[in-house]
Amino acid sequence: MASVSDQVKRVLIYRLGSLGDTVVALPCLHLVARTFPNAERRMLTNIPVNAKAPTLALVLGESGLVHSYMSYPVGARKLGIFHRLSGLIREWNPDVLVYLAEPRGLVASLRDACFFRVSGVKRIIGLPWRRRHRRHRWIAAGGFYEPEAARLAGCVSDLGDARLREPASWDLHLAGAERERAQELLREWTGKNSFVACCVGTKVEVKDWGVDNWRSLLARLGKRYPSLGLVMVGSAEEAAVSSEASAEWRGPVFNLSGVTTPRETAAVLEQAKLFVGHDSGPMHLAAAVGIRCVAVFSARNLPQIWFPQGNNHRVIYHHVPCEGCGLEQCVKFQKRCITSVSVNEMYGAVSAVLNDASAVF
Image (cartoon, rainbow, N blue to C red; front, side):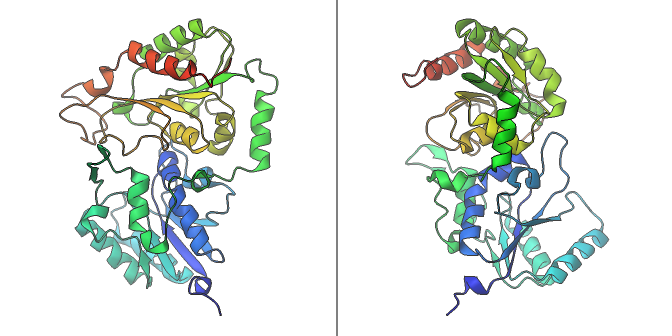
């Protein structure tokens, strides 16, 4: 006898965002694939997004977690646009909608529920009716806020356990061709056998530590570890700042900003000894492929929510009274949360990881 999940033929997954938003949703996407293995899974998402932020399609690639995409008009105000989208959803006729939205208030959740019901969706999983699913809870026992991946997993817990602690739940299912591309790029580079990966770009100004800080940090690290190579990753728009930041590195430098796709970047990162950078999409990619991270964070978000997954990372986060502000630009305090992070502090954190007994150069 066929199970209920076997009878589901079409699953629509609602998730907006870009690289980091996609990576933290990976355990839930794996859970959906396990629950509905025979269904066609389509993602309703924003296409395109910020020039520095790749679409979910570029992040998930041919992983098999999602089969196709439907465009969601972020920021649209005309009813006609949503009427057309509603018609497309009704035409595709999904059996189930999996709702993986960012934290939203009850009114916004009700509005979304009405839209999808009007669009013919009869079963919706993941709508945050409970208050604890509409925000990141303070975990008193651990002394931190609930990570976004955990909040999402709680929203869709009716489907089962998202297995957040299992490496397989973060698997991007990189293809052989993507790993071959990474090998091809690194083959002739003299630093390929031992290198640090770094991303100094960010699409949110308040999260930017500053190119002068990065240049100073990388100059000191390059002097202390002259045999190490340095790979810079990021978008094409970040190529110039990556070159400037790495100008005084003593060892071999390879600037791959804008050269690789997100998935090819992941294939490069999994060969690195360490990732150093901002709170960014590449940081989440590095953590997903099992690479230790040293990351500098602004206090734009509450602590732990967007930290890299895993327990072996070093995160530099300065607590300030205004943490969790959500601002993209900080005029009043001149983003003191991140500008107060010194080069010495970052240097100490990176050196501690590189000097770990397991690190061999």
